[in-house]
Image 1 (cartoon, rainbow, N blue to C red):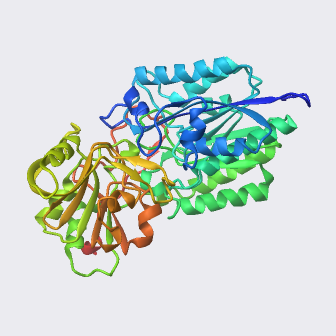
Image 2 (image 1 turned 30 degrees about the vertical axis):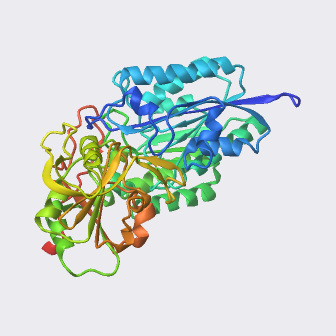
Image 3 (image 1 turned 135 degrees about the vertical axis):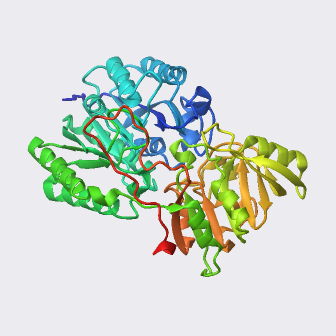
Length: 506
């Protein structure tokens, strides 16, 4: 129980440390990844955090925003968002951890700690990066100081994370439209805990199968119903809060997978709530298996002239920077050019070499490029063609969509190129195509395109789904229905991604 005297000034430390680790990506999560700004600010320290994150749709911003209405002295530690990458290097993890822990130690004594974590971070020397970081925070502040965390919907929640934190609150939307709101919920929970002094009972269950990334979308079934059921159980059983994490299935660690975690004042009720939601998910296991279109069939479909006045959307779900991928594969681009598809726009393809060459050539120039395929991913190669340079930019783009919520995107030195009937947004920094501003900044109106090709798994739906006539999820020829896992728990079932098909075959 937390006991505070009536005249005590409550001090709450707030910090953020995030990375979503794709074990199968060749792009290491170096310290530079955490330093650089992308869709969110880079490493920010102390009081500068408050101003830097104001207005962003991220958990840390929500924590800080809600804290303003609480009777606390807020101690901002640091914010560090490493986005999505391959395995985090030991150097990066230790340097960022040391920074946050040093700032926390300097802030002591504190009455509580609020953290904005991802929940699926893996380092070269640690399977459970978030659990390891929480252990260090707990060791520093002691067993009595409450720690509450906001987590990503794709968290691979471990038992250690549940044990070390007093409460974990997880996003409920994918696309993640409620990141800041989850931070606000976490801060409200902390305020209640500090006000009444009682820590909640908790329960946790891991779900023994992996959910493919696209099937965690809360706009579609079966995940849409899972979150509706979650809210019904919360109200019916009478618990403080219940969370469902879809897990991040591209993480090859023993604790990878979905989970349910719940909190409340009565242990029996919390156990029932967690078990009820666990059973609901388990009954729908077969529904989580997706089916995708091949590149050839998807582009053949796009080439047909049976289109409404809204664009057909091809989602390049396997080359998503937001899941740690390279965003430089060219399967779709090559097929679009080969089939001479007109009125197409593709983005965002990351190739700093080609972006630089376009800048040197200048607007209006025609330049032969070996574009993409530079990440070293096996089986991938650049696409060689002659491109016209239509527009150039230093890549600082004001977001207009709901997902990035008005933040400034940083694509680095970038260009709009054209080959055949296809326009291509080429960047120097990886960023998934989840905001229409990534096209309109270069003079391309997505609404006027016949075909849109987006390198993103699900987040694109927040800004692009309303304007699409149809969405087709596309996978490359080398797509693996089951990734080559080595470290999962033996009892974990891997759901295959189903047949790669097209309605053209039916």
